[in-house]
Amino acid sequence: MDWNTLLAVVLGGLIGIVTNYFSNRYQLLRWREERDEQRREAKIQAKEKWIERDILSIMESLENTVCIHRKARLLFEQIEDDKEKKKEDLTKTILTKLTELRHEAARLNDYMAILVKSFEGEFDIYFSDFSKAILGFVISPVSIDKSFKNIKNINIVIEKAGIFQRALREKLITIRDTD
View (tube, helix red, strand yellow):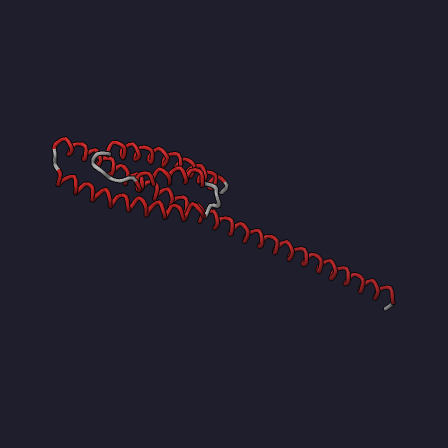
């Protein structure tokens, strides 16, 4: 066996080993990049899922708040009817129900405030208008003489709720479009 053959075999083997090494190294790097990309995508999807859950929770609370205000409007209208009929005992019961509804509206507003703050200012304008309208309902004194003003406050709350709902829905659509 001569040296040329031996050198050719060794060089051929080294070329195969070096080629195989670089190929495996490239595949490993590519596999790591794909794995990291999958992890990033999973994190983004999880984040979007939590954002969607929070938005749906705010929308549900908003719907419950509107239902509370509709019930309050009906009670104020009933106060107007009772005022004409001079039914004092029924009016006191209605005022008690209204107080309960006001407490529930305040509780829902506080819950929504916590969730809205997690969006770092994205919904602050819409929520502050809505929250001011709710506070107008919650803070204003419930009296038999001012039931018309209270009905007007309730209508403002429902209007602001619609604007806030639209902003939430648009955000929800943009989140779902990215999927």
